[in-house]
Image (cartoon, rainbow, N blue to C red; front, side, top):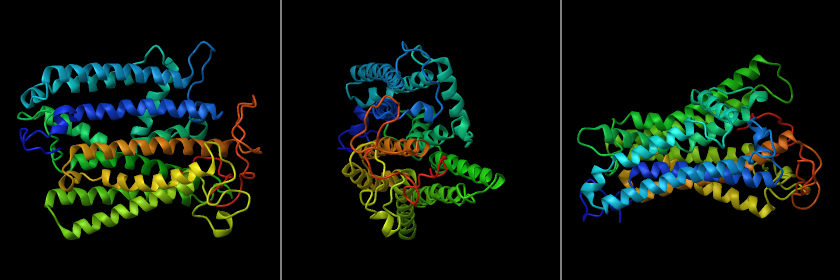
Length: 421
């Protein structure tokens, strides 16, 4: 078990086998594989994800589809990862002294990982690579493109970054421990490394990015022509408020770490977690997925669609949507825990912290299917035919018949932009 007294005090048994830098690398590589699955399955449903995010299209039938290029990238990253990890195991044999001494090896892999993402590969077109880097640069400072230039792609990437808040914090901790004169990146993670301010601030940055994007969108609406479709921009402010609910969770966690156990701080932290989880869950269901679960009783139980859902469903049958809603509620609670820098104080298990990070990545992967489906429906409103999604040669799938997709508050088909993220 973690914290096993049989090993040196600076190492737990989980870190002996799976040091913190390798955990960070594993989560990143896993995300690439999962994105490939997103692209492949949505393409089978005739949902053109690259067109939604304004990613360069394939110019030749000889070019591999986007999901295949993603799988090839994931395979390359996985092969390098496996080689690095096997070499690490071969030379350390779970010996605490050797594990501490070989900390440069997993950090070298992280450098290779960064280089692969920043340098173009043969399977990735130069246009696509430039598009990715420009989007990353714009999003990293909270910028957001116009709708015609790929606003949805910016929002999607920024939302994904919020799920990596703790991973970014762990990366900083590993680097901090490596450069400390008496430290090692493969030692038991010291999440106080670098002070009690830097790591919480790093974890808050992704939410700050989305908050700024929402405020930019609000400003655009106020400067433009307001009509029935765009409204006065209140939905952007409500979305900004949702991201701001992450900050109290982080702040109260940091205060508990710096000041020690406090019943008052703990109660405030729990309250902040409840608000963040409830608000985020509501937004996922009602705004990101346009389901009617939180709409009025008449719309929620309308005879032309399954209870609490919407008229057009692409991803699967109604039962799948109910299951995903329940899963999202459960995992949203673990997401609030993941925002906590002091998590290791009351759950001193490194493996538990890693599982929480993994679950958040899994939740975001599931979320992407339904968020992209919703955006596709908003941009391709039209008649739906009964039965599963079919390939009719038009490039647009035929959804399960739950009526035409328009009107109402959870299934608002008239929202044609990305305002509800």
